[in-house]
Amino acid sequence: MDEIFDVMILGAGAAGLAAGIYSSRAKLNTLILNEGAIGGQMVLTDEIANYPGVEPTKGYIVANTMKKQAKDFGCKIKSNIKIAGYKLEGNIKTIELEDGRSFRAKLVILASGGKPRSLSIPGEEKFKGTGVSYCATCDGDFFTGKEVIVVGGGNSALEEAVTLTSYASKVTIVHQFDHFQAFEHAIQKAKKNPKISFIMESELREFKGTEVLEKVSIENLKTGKLTEMRIDGVFIFVGYLPNTDALKDIVKTNDRNEIIVDADMKTNIPGVFAAGDCIVKKYRQVTTAVADGTIAALNAIEYLRSSIKTI
Amino acid sequence: MLETTVHEIETASELEKIINENENVMVSCGRMGPMCIPVYDAMEELKEERPDVKFYVMGFDTPEASPIRNAPMCRGFMGLPFNVYYKNDKMVTATSSIQDKEQIVSVMDQFFA
Image 1 (tube, rainbow over the protein chains, first blue to last red):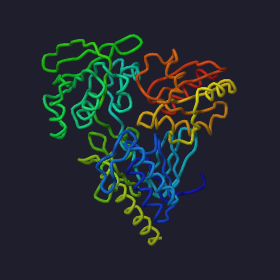
Image 2: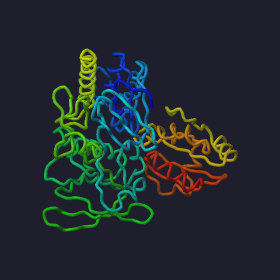
Image 3: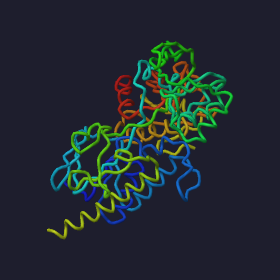
Image 4: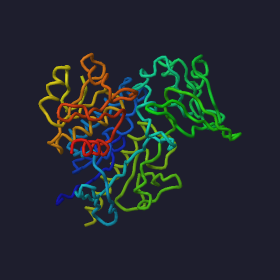
């Protein structure tokens, strides 16, 4: 507890690890605190195919490489911790953990990323792993010859629906709008697939079953009509929420709880930066998260050096 | 081979030996996907924090994992990994799909007390 780090980074996804690489390579005493699995959403991605200069690679391998790079430069990483409190004002910032430990640093970079959005409807938690899934490549083969629903309308939903046709006898995409948000090529690929059908302007309302998922109830948003559909599995791909619940009353956020930063990744609190999927931004990709983390770290380095000159 | 510092069980006979020789055992049977890796990460932390429990992983696709895949408590599971818990040589509970560290601890506190 006596040690005061130069930089503390909250989150070990692409943004946090990139910030850690730059910060520790600049010989700043750097600590990354991470609540979930190291790698963040990269680990949730089976294959990253569009990282420039890197051939299509498993998400966890890209994450592991970034982690190794950060550690090789001297970055310390503590994962699977739970943050209980933030004291971000003043010259020394303190992060308190639920286990009683606390860590201090001169600067903080918030890189808490995003978490998969759930439907938050009855039965979702009960049937997780017994009919409800969030990963087609992980669990698709359990549904060989069966009928499944994919919920969502973005790239992940459309692409994973196509993946699932390798296993399922039938895939039904259920989406809340009358059009998809995915890239056109993903939409066309799904529409051309004879195993895929569509239920638009509709939402799931409940998962039902005894030991395993057996059916779902679906509401047509235009008519309000509820129908029940027998189904073997449901795959949920409805986007991500920023991991900022604990921060929204501490740093300035917008109405979607995304952290507001300037071009230097500075928040409204001096000495506190933010980067990656938790900030206000249009595009959320590994490449943009890495860029944010880099910019935050470089500005943090400059901020620290100019504060030393001022003393 | 699973990429984790948690020991990977290679054979059914090794699994049986481990269960026989240890009071509390957790085995996560999976692959290297986005639902499995977070569980292994949590187990890497827990193996340092919980000396009362032995933690292992096992590849889901090996025929040697059939005692777990076909266990009655895993009937109906359709999500990786299969996380199984043994106490005094008996499987006492099992969960399917991703679990965070807190959820794993909660299961252990309930069944390994």
